[in-house]
Image (cartoon, rainbow, N blue to C red; front, side, top):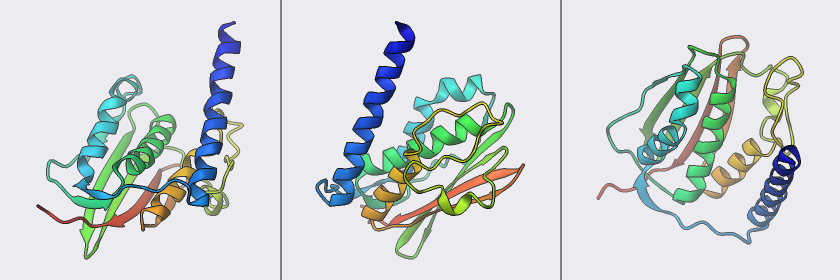
Length: 186
C-alpha cells in the first residue's frame, strides 16, 4: 500500500506539473512581478533543504549577505531556484560543493548555481530544458523524476524576461545560470 500511495502521489504531481506548464505556455497564468531581494529566495531554498544538504555532506559556498534586487514574480523564481538546487543536491557527491553567485550587470542580474559531480554529457546539454528530457542515468542512482523540472525553469525565466543556460565539464561540475531584470533599490 505504501508503494501504491507513493506512486499515486508521484502521478498526481506529474499531472499537476503538466497542467501548470500548459497554463504558463498558453499565457493563462500571468506572473506578478515586484522588486525583491533575490538572495532571500536563494537562502530560503537552501534552508528548506538543510537536512538533505547535511545528510549528503555537501558544502554550500557563496551565500551572500548583501541584497541584490530583481524585478520578477517571487513565486516563479522560487520554483526555478528550488528545481535547480534540488537537482544539484541529487547529483552532488558526498563532500561535494554547491556554489552560488549573484551579480548585477547593468539592467540584468545574473544568478549562477554550480555543483561538483559527474556533470552533464556534452551531447545532452542542448536538450536539458526540453520537456520530459532526462539524460540517460542508467549508471546512476537518481533515475527518478519526470524530466519537467528544468523545462519549467526555462518557461518561468522566459516569462520573467530573462534567459537560462546550462554548462558542464564531465566528471567535474555542472553550472546553471539565469538572468532576471534588475530591480530598484528602495
